[in-house]
Image (cartoon, rainbow, N blue to C red; front, side):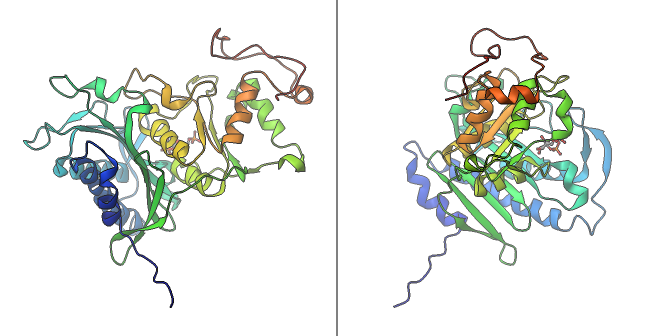
Length: 370
Ligand code: FDP
């Protein structure tokens, strides 16, 4: 007899998995549902963005000093509204808002979760019909605090109870983890329902591509430039040269890497030593997902999830993807470069001061990395 393929909706999956949490009271499941709902609404607008007068710049700038487009504002409102109405979060921090928002309704103010969200990542791609996304990170509220506040957001990434992203691409997918593997759901637009399509996602070890804004080349420190030269050298036995693929939407670049294997880099720049990406809204949630899928995420020296955040909109350099690729770039940053790459870029100057412990070690000549 032919076996019947089991169809699982996001809703069914959330219910099935609820018992993974010993302290579960259904609030986290409610949060994931709220995010799913907002994602469907944003998806609808993203899809008709070319048809209605929703594109274009509003003339405002966000707290990062960047232009805010209408769809960013729309997505921000949808996620805040859905999360506030759901009653399962007492506080929301959004990349689009300077400060966090306390949800003060009767049901929400005692809720035990905090949501940090980048409502529309890759927004410079909106006008050109290229994939964009939403990233979210969920913390449990700290105990013994009279009301939710900044300290709840500034917990290290290790304390995330769930994280995920939505990619609005050729199909719309919601991918999330609660620390028990990574699962992906694809939206059937005709039914308005997410279906489990990618169970227990694992990032391939083989580097299919590397992803970096190489236009910043002269702002990169020398170890990064050397690494970029090294990955372009032909060494078939090591799978080099690597292909270059850069969409410029972190969600889309990392979704490809999660499925195909690869490395995403956003290093510190000469004029921005911490790079561009935000620790709480982008690096932490993506690091949680990629680690859960068997990959690695660091700032070049330390695991992203172990960094202690000290401000809401903090930025961090980010090296994330297949374990092998991240370890290769780390070895260059630590100075353990293969000797012959020095011939490619002999200048040993660093842009930034060399930190003592746990930071950049002065370049070690001689033996290649093991
Ligand atoms: P965007 O500014 O378009 O929202 O952090 C946001 C982000 O996009 C990432 O999604 C993307 O990977 C990166 O910035 C692109 O930055 P560059 O334009 O500097 O490459």
